[in-house]
Image 1 (tube, rainbow, N blue to C red):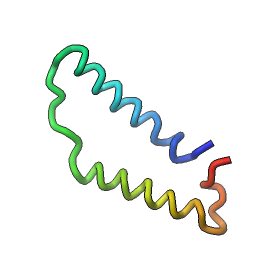
Image 2: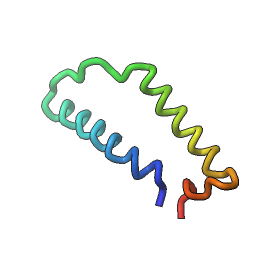
Image 3: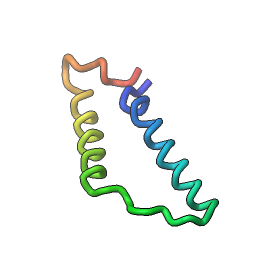
Image 4: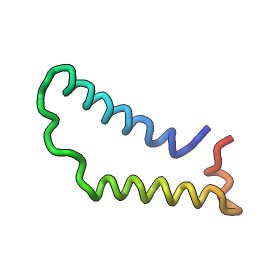
Length: 63
């Protein structure tokens, strides 16, 4: 019932699957996520958190 969760869940599952694969096989993970990716993710989550509570944007609210 959460639109942002619906969009981000496949991305998070893919990243978790990649991490699990590297842990099980013992292969190095390579470079971590770039800092701009982490900051963009945090910015999107914070913007969603605020926007879903504004009048007229009830479509973003869960339920």
